[in-house]
Length: 64
Image (cartoon, rainbow, N blue to C red; front, side, top):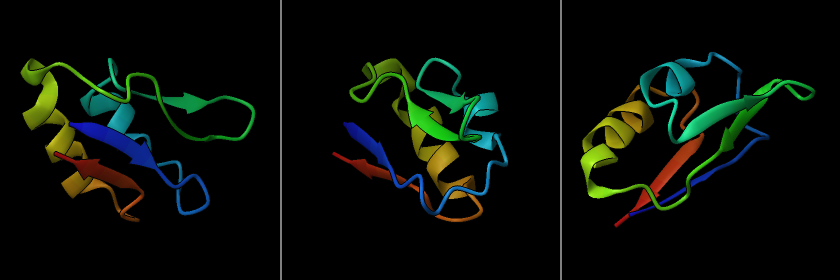
């Protein structure tokens, strides 16, 4: 799995960071999502996919 985000689309809801704080964080200066762990371990895959589905702007892209 590889995770990317489009910070231009981020609305700063923070749902992703709350759902999987090991993978997502919020840039305090820009108030947008950032990927902390672009290739998360298999144990986090389902939670990452869930965060991507719940993202209100579709900012999160998951491959693999």
